[in-house]
Every structure is written in C-alpha cells, then in structure tokens.
Length: 93
Length: 255
Image (cartoon, rainbow over all chains, first blue to last red; front, side, top):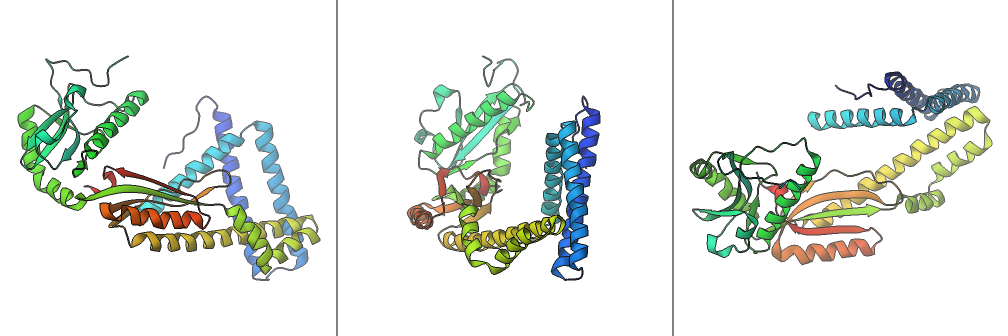
C-alpha cells in the first residue's frame, strides 16, 4: 500500500499525513455521534458537549492546516486513500 | 521534431498492430502514404506498421502522439463501413513478416470470434448528467426530516447546532445518493433494450453544477443507433444533459 509523500518537504508531508488521519478519526467520531443522536441514546446536554468538542477539534485541524500551508497535501492524501479503497472494492468484487 | 516511428531499416524490431478489418486488401484505401502496411491474412486484412524499437511509455508526449495515431488509423478503418476489431494501444509483434503471420495464424480463431461479435455493430459512449442543486431545492420543500433538521441547526447552541448540521448533511447526502441510484436504474433500463452489450465506465466526479450520473460504453447494432439516439433525446428533454458519441472502434468489447 503506497502513499506518495514529497521528499523535498518531508515535514509538511508527515504533518499532512497526521492531519489527514486526524480528519478521518474526527469524521468517525462525528458519524458515531450522529448514530447515537438518531438512536436517541444521548440527551441534549451530551449532544451539546460532544458537538462542542468535535467543533473545537475541527477548528483546530483547519487552523493547523492553514498555518502550516498543508491543505493541498492533506487533500492529496485523502484522494490517494479514496483510490486505495476504491481499488480494494473492485478487487473484492 | 522526432518522428513518432523512426525507422532504422537495418534494425527490425517488429510490427505495431492497429486493427484487423474483415475484408480483402483491395477494399482498404488511403493508408499506404501514411506508412501503415495492409497485410491480408485469410478473410482479414491487418493494419500494421513496421517499427524498429519497443515503445517506451516514459515520454508522455510520445505516448499521447501514439494514442492519437492509433485512434486515427482505427477510425479511418471504421469509415470503410467494414467490421473492424481494434487492438489496444501499444501492441507489437516482434520479428519479421513470418513471425507476424505465425501470430496471425495462432490468433485467427480468437479474432474471428471477436469479429462475429462486432459485425454490424459499433461502440457508442453515453454520459448522462444531472444537477443535484435543483433536486436539493425540491427536497427542501418536500422532505420533512430535512426541514426539521435544518430548523434544529438554527435553534440550538453552538455544539448541538454543529452536530445537527452534520446530521443534516449526512441525511441530505443519503437522499441525493438514493435519487442518483433511482435515476441510474431508470436510464439504464431505458437504454438496455436497444443495446447488445454494456460496459459501465468510471464516473468522474465533476465540480460545479453538472454531475455525471451514468457513463457507459454500448455495443449497438447499426440499425438501432437511431433508436438509442431517440431515447437519449427524450432523457435530455426531461432535464438531464446527455453526451452521446460514436461510432468508435469497439475497444471495450473485444478480447
């Protein structure tokens, strides 16, 4: 499984990879939170606390991406990961 | 400018394969001046070019030129209105004419089966698009779940509002996906009846308003081409832009 990272900008590439993985984790946590909301297994106060934490995480990730100038690197990694998943699904069929 | 196919007459690598046509040699005109050789073999005529080196795919410009050259020759053969089995880009039979004839003999039956498949047929490419934004406007008026979720985004404090916003986006994506699947099935069923064979091609994610909904290569009997065209015109009149191209050499349907 190969993901292309730029050798000339290793710090940016590694940070980009970390941010991409963080975004995936954040999406998974949001997905789980939404499932609990739909299943009504969390109350309004919990929704508010969970939402605030996820919102803060989202804002922090966006801020780091902007400050480090790695938004394009992160997008590129997401695209590569999407291609890997698509490829695996095709092979599975 | 480097020629696409530089020929060193003292070094003979092989023959580049373009396509095979179901006809006698004398019915194919206009190729000799391009350097393409027409070689008869039993009931077929092969369009080939002698080459003195294998193709390197490292030079992007050379590869683009090669693809263009390959397409031009195959499409010119198709204009003869004779059955044409195209080869994929980049095939070379190594050796001289006798090696080429050995290859032709070995693969004759396979080519014959391919020829039977595409005789009196041609490949067409169909893309159908839709504008999801128009559907979202419709949903905002008719879908109660989405309306309620949208209201909750506005009512709540920041944390809950954020989660309700994500929930709204997820529900909206679900509705769009369902509608896209329904439309795909509807159009596929309409097209299916006048097509001999399908290959579903990759859908490219478009930016902007127009999104690709269906992308297929179709093998169509020549007398069904107008029927397919009428069906696609009808789909376009319903509000779904259509891109319908062909006939092409049947690259997607030959082995």
